Amino acid sequence: MSGDSSFLAQPGRRAAIPIMVLLLLGFVAPLLAVVGFSFMPPRTFGLWHEPSLENYERIFSDNTYVSLLWSLGLASLTVVLLALICYPVAYGLVRVFGRWSTALTLLFTIPLIVSENIRLYGWVLFFIKGGVLPGTLKALFGVEMGDFLFTPAAVLFGMVYVYLPFMLFPMTLGIAMVPNQMREAARDLGATRWQVFREVELPLSTPGLMIGSLLTFVLAVGAIAEAKVLGGQRIIPITHDIEIAFTYAQNWPLGAALAVLLMLVVSVLVLTVLKRFDLDQILGKR
Amino acid sequence: MSDSNYSVRHILIGVWTAAVLMFVFLPSATILIASMTASRYFTFPITAFGFDWWSKTINSLEVRSLAYTSLSIAAVVTVIAVVLGFFGALAFARYDWRGRKLYQKFILLPIFFPQSVLGLALLLWFNALGFTLSWKTAVLAHLVWIAPVVTLVMAIQVYSFDPSLEEAATDLGASRWQTFREVTLPVLMPGIFSGSLFAFLLSWGNFPLSLFTTGADNTLPKYLYAKMVAGYTPGVPVLGTISTAAAAIVLFGGYVAMLLLTRNRKAAL
Image 1: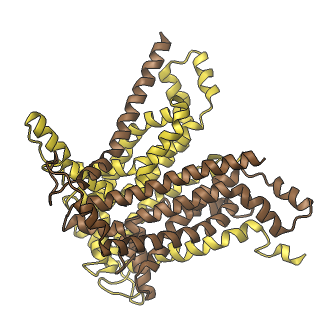
Image 2: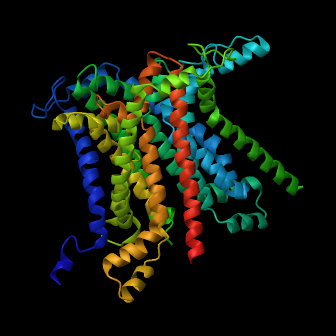
Image 3: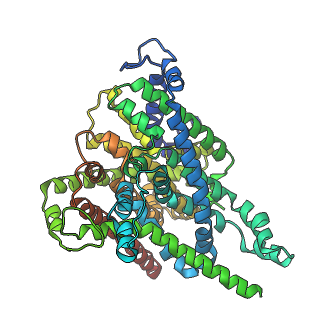
């Protein structure tokens, strides 16, 4: 049959078309438009002007890149802290809690479905003067609490809080991938607890760890609500600069150039990490 | 000796997990407490409890229209995302075809992308196309992120699907449509179900995409954000609690429904 040789003969390819169309029109095209706009002269609103590098020059001469450094730094710290916080929990979910694991996992899922700004606002009411923590300290011990809200530490705290599930769940998957026999074998051969961790557990659960770290980093670098709600504009993350350029300042090309810088960092990271993994293996094809 | 070390470690892990869980739920608990105050401003410990703000919020026409907008967006997103995700997942995990590995990674890209930047890029894109921003553009924006998530969730189910079932049905004389309706669809039902649950809840709670793409239409998370920044009333925690409770009910309801579904299936076999 001549149809077999046509592009759409393979059923998998046909099935992929609808979502591919969506992503080409709703993901690739907008990002290309952003790249295009980043080379337009400042404060223009079309793509037909003479291309220029003015926006990029301005970012580096005006110190706007400082906000990019803030975002990258906070996101890296978030990843490190979350890796430390989540590892024991993920380990417990896979190896210790047994039949309670499903219920616990469900509990950890709930925050994901609540809008992040609502949860962050819960922290505002918790830490604010006269809020839950200062109020309790005052009522019980008569101690006045120093200001924590609206500091860089509060922003970091909020990011660690919001992105916790994104580290926890891939990590759990990763640890579940380590066969129990491997650990037992290592123990039988006389490895200490620490050696088992370093030589068996950690390397074999790396895919989950890497994917969790990557996901957390990427989302944290794009964090916007944390600085708005908990940071009180004390820290200006790159996303805030981009938003200002696109909205109040009406300077699309500048905003686009900032977005391109952020996208560059993110895509280099994502592409290098994703290249190393076989998704069929991770997601469960035997 | 090693046995007692073992159990000490397990206890430590248990305590740590409990602490992390508390950390996870503290803000929601705070919101709940703050919603029950009678006074205009929140102070803790609460001196006067009251539920006036609850009745005020529930009876507010504005809140109702917000909830309606959020609900419409979530419903439309769910239906479209499930259809796209269903076929997307078949292409992801069921069929072997040239370009599949590349496709799998491409699907992940919108998930591994900062949502606020995606929202702003779409804002620029919609403007460039001359679209007026409304809840409809928000549906598109949500889909770009949620359809890949649903595809992944369903793909996990598809991986465990045995293609020989389809072949057996065809060998027994079933037409393509019959095979699809009687074999493929029922077997993949749990995946479809959890996929739609995810789609609905992620859309219902989304803030960064809605912030830039809803235009004049307001969703609950966006409205709450505006109120947090300027014009706090105890209505904010009340609405936050309601929105959280609604999502939790959908999640647990879905979980129970899924358990019943699989139990019935097992009983029928």
